[in-house]
Image (cartoon, rainbow, N blue to C red; front, side, top):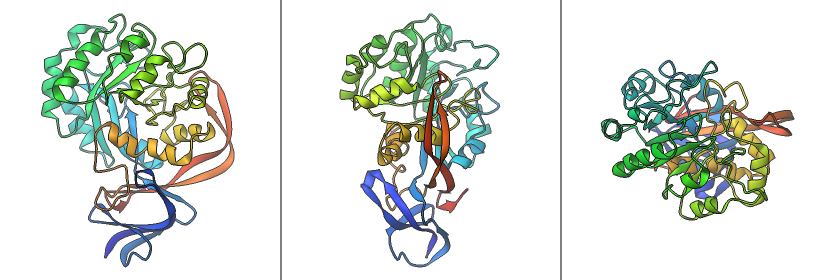
Length: 374
């Protein structure tokens, strides 16, 4: 007997190239069957008229609540959106990853996996009152400390994070990235790189990114945008994609523009991953949450299956997780149940530009570890 069966929903699993009305069953914390007439179950949920997709994964969040200036409460954020895995994008560094783990990660219901910041203190002074770039003082970027902390928490750390630019590294230029690359290379982990206002410049960053590394804020407005002046995609960006660099949206407070997105999509350059970059300054707008980011791309013309792919299996692959992001039997029993709500909605980018649409995603429930969660 299955523990739970979701019945009659439109199951979309891009990894399996599956898009059909079907039932899906969960047992012992895992997906146990996908199809029809799946047999007896202890609990059944009617998903008729709804989308059933792999448990959503938000690749770029800041959820070190109470321990970092920018953290939001992970469960309060994830539950209403049906997000089953949160990837924290470097809120903590070697000096406070143990606190993040004990006081937030281990206590949360939602799954949380962190990138470890190359700066010893993580992102420690990010607020509406003032900002101190955490990578401006190179004394805080000790590769040995970062390496040792990543090894000590190897069961949860999924990569190394560095923030570059005026708001992340001040006038330190490209040096923080070179230190972070050394650590990531030693550990065999991907590097997630944030880039805002120069210095450094986009070309300096792009040429250093390795296959499997992640450029977040990939549809940011000028400066350091991925677009050339003629609205074509920059040559170094195209070269990076060819060699396997992963492009993540990371919406946030200052890192996503409709004009850039429309031009990139027109050029056929779809993001690999959709993520919110939710934190204390973006959760009340303009990012709000992952579902809002997904809805923006729905109205920008990105196909529904690709939106789901970029919010599930692609996010899992970006951090080398093979146990989630798809509804294959035998993998983690995580699923998200969504409705596409009709109405009149206004979406806003980080520049205040607006996009008016008629559809948005609304969570109707979630399955976490094989159990109804929402």
